[in-house]
Length: 212
Image (cartoon, rainbow, N blue to C red):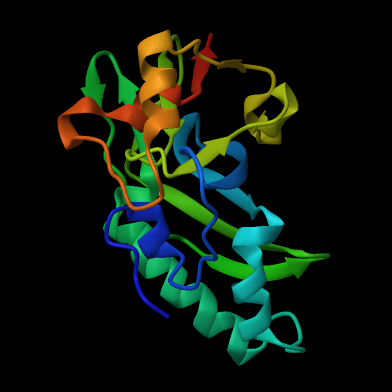
């Protein structure tokens, strides 16, 4: 199967089935849990559920393989390598400074849920970050907006049990300009927006983590 060079996330999904029409062409539902240790933020547990069309070829390649089998481990490793190449498709900020991530996930796996493929992984911070009185923001998105990566519900962002008494999370969904909407709708699957436009970022939801 050919790689789609014009989409970072489509490159991630080596086996993606394409549809015609405006951007976005595929959809991934996000779920994220913030994790702490010793009163410090240490990681984000990620769960990405791909739409049925995006999942089709992945599930075909997996065949009847059982969960946790070598087939699924190989698929997960291939996808995860590309996720790492794009810095997890995630940006985190604290006091105007970018928060860095480790180059390797803590753990990762892929599985089948009905007609959908699900990728789960732990995104570890390069250094533990203080929680007391601090605010962090983060977003997960495909810069080209070829793939829509979004949270469906407020509860799709959550806190680990150790953080619930001290912190809260809020989800903000932006309202892109008419110009951005029109431009996205004008893009065919072979098109890509200018890199400096950061089209995907204009549609990206923002999660805010606030701690006492």
